[in-house]
Image (cartoon, rainbow, N blue to C red):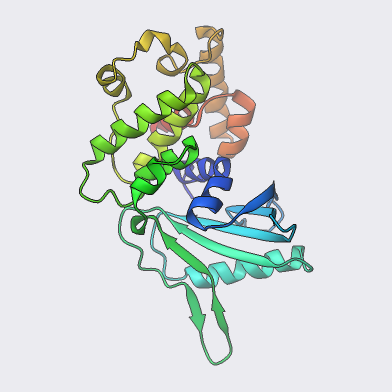
Length: 266
């Protein structure tokens, strides 16, 4: 699994609640992420695993797999994940979802049907969802996901422009938060081969870029250039030592977009 794929899954981990709410139509009251580090020695880990409760207090395990490629053996893999999860959490009900975010249409099966086994999970293709539903939500997390949906007859650049305009309005003067959502947008856009020129978008929106040095310079306000260079140097060393993207982001404090540029250059 490439670093870009890992980082994309980190994005969805951050917006897990909105994924469950707006895509899977789940009404969750609480969400507790569950680590999957100990699943299988060959490193077959579930992408997103959480213990959730709904508005009635019912507790269950929510398993979400993020796929950007069609793989015909996916039902077997999902069943494998299910047995692992059930062995770790034998008394809890498990709900499985596959969220497909790739550019080609979804062609993977979502079930196994044999004389010995009847197994099915829920698979959702982001292409089948109307981007207008997401872009009209009051949540920045949902708005970012609009780029993965069916854009209808709207040009991708127009959608990007509308998303960025809404993100700027919703984050107001919180430059750090805005930069995080723009980084998410860039990563998700790569799944659709959409190029985003942030500086051009800011110019079109008549936003003074110098007011957002934390995004343009790739650093927080108050962090010196020297500190930024040191963080990048440490990140390169961690990449060479095969640290995971999650660990590198936590140790260095870099953004996902900055790490993505480093991994692409390796």
